[in-house]
Each structure stands twice: as C-alpha cells, then as structure tokens.
Amino acid sequence: MNRRPTLAATALALLGTLSLTACTGGAVPGTSKDRPADPASRADLKAFYGQRLEWTGCATDGYECARLTVPLDYAHPGNGRTFVLPVARAAATGPAERIGSLVYNPGGPGAGGVSSLEEGMDEAFGAAVRARFDIVSFDLRGVGGSVPALTCEPTEEETEEPEPEEETPEEEETFDPVAPLYPRTEADRAEAASGARTAAEDCEEHSGPILRHVGTEDAARDLDVLRAALGERRLTYLGWSYGTSLGTSYAEQFPGRVRAMVLDGAIDPSLDWSQRVLSQSAGFRRSVDDYAEQCAEIAGDSCPGRGPEEIRALIERLYQQAEREPLPVAEDSTYAEYGGMDATAVLHAVSMAMYRPEDQWEPLSEALREADQGDATKLGALGEEEAEADDTEPGTTEDDGTPAVPADNSDAALTAVNCLDIPHPRSLRPYWDALAPADQAAGVYGTTGVTAELTCRDWPSGDRRPHRVEAEGVPPVLVVGTTGDPATPYEESVSLAEQFPQGMLLTYEGLGHTAYGRGDACVTAKVDAYLVKGERVGPGTTC
Image (cartoon, rainbow, N blue to C red; front, side, top):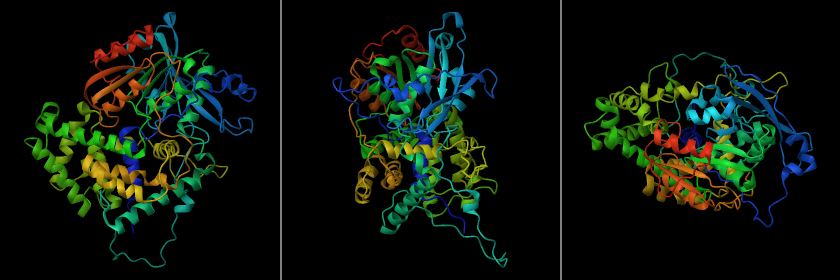
C-alpha cells in the first residue's frame, strides 16, 4: 500500500513552503530597567564573540564563504556543545565607498541564507546598497548546512520493508483515502491528529537533542555573534517574511546594536497561534480572489475562464473533485506514487502561485485548465522546482552513524520554529473549535491552516508569549508592507510599524509576497536611501 502524506503534515508543509513564514515571534524582552547585561561582556561568551571569520571561495564563483560557531544553549555556553553555521558574502561592488556589512535573512523559517546568496540573492538589492555594503547571509541554527541540522526523516534502514515471500503481480495497488480539507467527522479528525502526532514523534526521534534550541530568540543571538565576527559595531539588517520575526527579536534583545533595519512582509508578534492562522489564511483567500479578478490583466488569454466567476468555480470544482478522488497525473509525476493529486496538493499548487503573479499566474492558468480536462500533471509540477533543491539522498546515514540531513530541510525547520516559538494548546478541543471560524473567514485556506498547527500540540514549547514589541532605544525601523501580500498580510505590517518606537511604514500597492527586490523602482529607491543614508520615510508613504 502506498501511503499519502497525512493532512496535518502536508498542510503544515504547505503553509511553510508557501509563505516562507511561520507563526513565530521574538522573545519578550526585559524592560529598559531589567534588560540583562551585554552578552558580549559575559566571560563564558567571549570566545564566541571574539571570533573572526576566515573567508575562502564558495562553491559558486564570486562569493566567499566562512563558518561561525555559536553555543547550542546560551544558558550553558561552556558545555562544549555548539552549532557551526555556514556564512556567505558578496563583496561590495564599490569598495572605496564601503560602509560595512549588510546581513539579510531570506525567510522561512528554514530558507538557507547561503544557498540563496549563491543563487544570486545579492541582485535583489539596489545598486546603491550593493556598492556600499558586503551582502551577507547565513544558515540559521539547525537549517541547511548547519552542523548539527534538523531532520525529521527516517533513515534508509528504518524505512526498508522486507520483500514479500511470494510475488502477487495480479494484486492491485491501493492508496489511502483522500484527506478532506475540512475534517468534520470524528474519523477524519482522529486521522489528522494521529498524523500530526506521528510527525512530531519523528522529529523528536531524529533531532531530539537540538529541538529546544532552534527558536527565533536563539537565532537572533547568533545574529549578534555574527555581527561581532564581521567586525561591525552595529548591525545593518534586512529581513523578508520570517526574517522580520528574526529582526524583531534582535531589535528587542539588542536595541542599541541596530544601525538600520528593514522588515519586508511583516509578522505581527502580538498575535496568538489561532489569530495568525486566520490572518495568513485570509491573505491567501484574498489573493486567490485577486487572481480570479485580475487574471486577464496579467495572464492574458491563458486564463482558465472567461471571467472571475468561471475561474472561481473551476478552482472550487477541482478542490471538490480531488477530495473525492485524486486528480490523474502522468506516470513520471511526483504525485503518481500517491495515486494523483489530492485536495491538499491542489490547494498547495494554487496557493504557491500567489507569490509572484507576474511569473506564476500564466503557468497556473494553463495547469488549471488541463487539470479540469483530466490531466493534473502540470499542476503538480508547479512546486517541483522547489522540491528539486533537496539534492541529498534522504534516509541514508553518515559514516559516524548519525542521520544524513537533506540539503533542503526547510520543512523540518518550519515545524520546529513554528512550534517552539508560539504556545499551542495541548488538548485537541481548541483546534476543532477553531475550524468553523477559520472556515467562515477563509474557507479551505483557513481550515487547512488550523489543521497544520496540530503538530505543535505534541511539540516542546518555549517560554515566549504573544506580545507587542518592546525595543526601547532602537533607532527608526523601516517596515515594508504589500497591500496584496498573500502570506504576510498588509495589516500585520501596519501593526508592526506602529509597535516599534519611531517605526516607519512604506506601503507598496501591489500583488505578491514582499516588495523590495521585485523590481519596483520606488520601493528600491526608498529602501536604499534609508539603508545607505538613513533617510526616513514619512507617514503615508506609498509606492
């Protein structure tokens, strides 16, 4: 029997892959009166803060790479247990005018900073910024090339099944029933809860020793160690999506260490787990409506309907069909081994395409039309480019017997940070109670968002709580919000800018996820002027 991924596990991966965010927030800092002493002055942290990076050529020409060592547990930094984190930089193009290093986080949690830079992420920055700053990024603790790194996958030995004693070629292959997008029955809910528990147990089994040490608060402390290792007195930082949570946490813990900070596609740390689900899922629902309304303007004749109502009806029809039976795909499709695309996979493909309408709406339109005609192969292929980033054979072991970690372990990191950073209920009732409001607010985008959080019920949790930003003494922070952002709704950017002392909001009136680096000249000019010259953005500034 081929087993399809459970609804909870698939939905959680869906939200993370889609948004490059998770329900995370920075730690609640102390007030100005009780903030702890400068960590760099602690004797047991001096070895970490005293590092200087040794740069060598990266595998990709034009970039330099190094490694940063940070303590596994900041409460016990001298116990010998560490993370070793890959770092990469693109040197300033105008060295005579160089200001220093600019560190960025591309999102996630779980997106690899080093791989993103080697793939050309420095080109997302404006020419003025690239001339004046070394563009630097790093893999967060547990992510990508971090040693150790998170994995929730069984080894090859664990997944090997004994060969049957007798061949039965006439026996038909069977598949698990399709999981519904809204689990209404007790049986469906029990299956979702069981799948989520299994996912949590797999992560505990394979990454247990580090699970409690990969939260955003510790990652922000690593960021300060990196600042010191780069030789910077104060940090210049840009974070996209989840990177806004990392930046917020840094600003709360080290407000006096910030030179300039841009947070693009913001996450509001004052929302609890259920509020975050409603916010993000409503954003995706609005974006799909935007697709239906504006498809003709962007995708032209490829649109799968003659108007918004036809497009909405087609998408809904595919969801309903896929809930009854997986949509057919070609034999070489990723989804062939599951018997086709189930409803969660279809939802995943549609939502993925909301990120960059200018690039994704046309192929989405063609894929939807073919899926409606009985072939979902193109629909299933929309996310395969991301999947191919995992070029490590999963399920093998290293020479020392430890599990090998895929090059892309973003799903494991998403789960770990999401669950560790934000408290989640331990009983099932709050999740089931949240389904109806989520359905009313965002339809299937809301119900799958709630189900995605089930894994966190059985996960170790930290001591952070939803809170408004406390960063007294931080210089003006620039928050960038996109009015049609599916994954980090504009309202959260408005809220975050209001929470920062002297917070500034730059509004981009457009579609898609985040704004800076997507080609809008107005956004580029405003952000670059702030990063290079410290120019403030006035209230109501819109691009």
